[in-house]
Image (cartoon, rainbow, N blue to C red; front, side, top):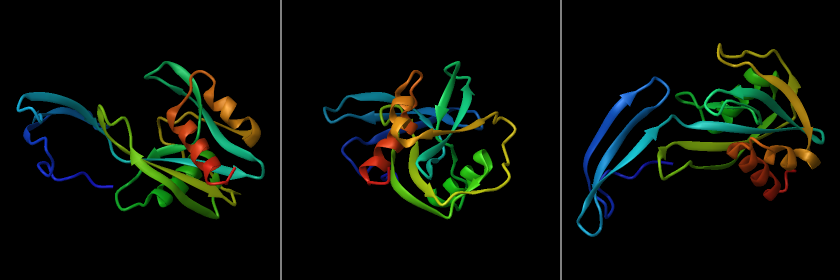
Length: 182
C-alpha cells in the first residue's frame, strides 16, 4: 500500500506539519482545501506498519495475554508487532511469532493488508496466517511481558469479543475464517 502524492486528489494539501515525534509515532496535521474551497486542519498520528499473526496449531490458536497500559487492561490478543525495514508482512509475522510465542511457522501467508483508523491515523496493518508451528526459544523485547496461551478455534471469536475486545484479533479471526482456514 502506498500513500497517494500529496496533491493527486481533490483536496490539495496547503500545509503539512509534524507537531511532535515520540520515537513510536509522529503526530501532526495537514491543512487542506476542501471541495467547497474552505480549509481545515486534519490531525493525524503516523505509526509504522504492523503485522498481526493468526497462528494455528491443530485445532487451537496461539494467543498472548498482556497488559496494555493505554487502556489499563489485560488483553487476549494474537501476536503482533512492527514490520522492520525491508521485511514483508509474512517475514515480520514469522519473526514476531517466534519472538513472542516461541513458535516458528513452516508457512505464513498474507490474508489482508489495509489502512487502520483512517479518520485519525496513517497506519497500515497486515494480517498473516501461520501454520506448521515448531517450538523454538522466545526473544521478547524489553517491554513485552506476555503469557502465551492457546484457545480452541471453536471458542476463539467468543473469547476475542470478550471485554476488552481487540480490533486486530477480531479482524484476524474473521479474515481467517472467511478464507476457510479456521
